[in-house]
Length: 115
Image (cartoon, rainbow, N blue to C red; front, top):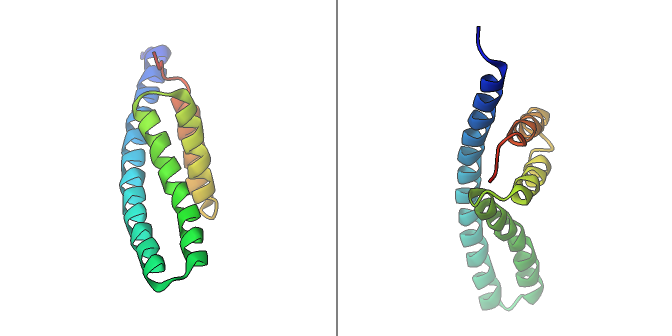
């Protein structure tokens, strides 16, 4: 018979490994978005449309802040984990199963020893 304490720690390790993969993919996509938004800001400056440029700069802050929290997650910050799950919940809001899985992984990852 297996030890329940060992299974819980295995599940939390598994959840952490899954989260590392998810946040790596999201971080790569955030970098792609920042590059695309940077190009749009450049086009806004060239065309002389400051209102579009300011709007794009404001929108660009979302992937930049998410990258900041992804970096914090890899540095094992508990606050970053909570913030990233808020981002995941908001971005997956139109996909209920994605939001449910994100919440499930958040609950499992809370058991990780961060120190």
